[in-house]
Structure formats: structure tokens, C-alpha cells
Image (cartoon, rainbow, N blue to C red; front, top):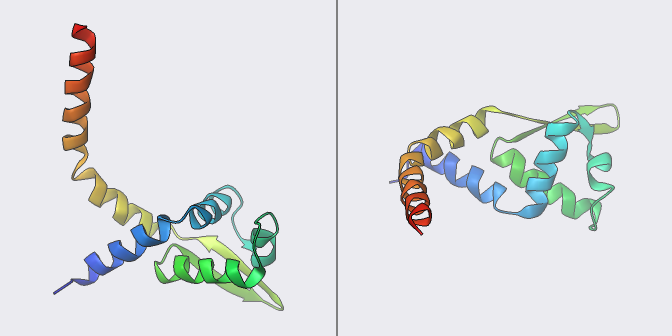
Length: 109
């Protein structure tokens, strides 16, 4: 059985696996509270396609949308990223040890 936190991690990593969604996250990190149309403008796709990407990000908890009159704005939500980073940090020592061994091998040559 998959626990709630594992399902949430699956949604976060699946959302971040797509380059368009990573670009949307990066834009929102640099420019908080952009409208959906402003987010879509530089992308080579239709507004409905961008909205589908935003749906995935919102389902993962990474983006929140708010409607102000006729304008829908998006903002980045940091808490799910913290959850993903905590999961990654548990395995950091394995990567670090491997890189340390590689560095030692390169230095011997």
C-alpha cells in the first residue's frame, strides 16, 4: 500500500520530470504571482496546453492559482519542494561517497 507521503512524492517528481513544467516553476520562482497568460506567452504551445501543465503542478501542490476578477494568477508553493529535498538528502551520502571515490581515482592519474 502506498502511503500519502509516497504518493505526494510521486506527484512532485512526476510534475518536475517535464521540462515545460520545470520552466514554469523557474518563471514563478523568479516572478511570483504571474497570470496564466503571462506564463503562457513565451511558450511555444497553446494556452489550454499550458493550463494542463499547470493542473499537474497544482495537483502536486507546487503551484497555487487564485482568481482576481477575470485574471487567474499563479504562485509557487515551496512546501512540496522541501518534502522532495528532504527525501533526496537521505540519499546524498551515497552520491557524495561515489563522487569522492571518483575524485580520488582521477587524482591518482
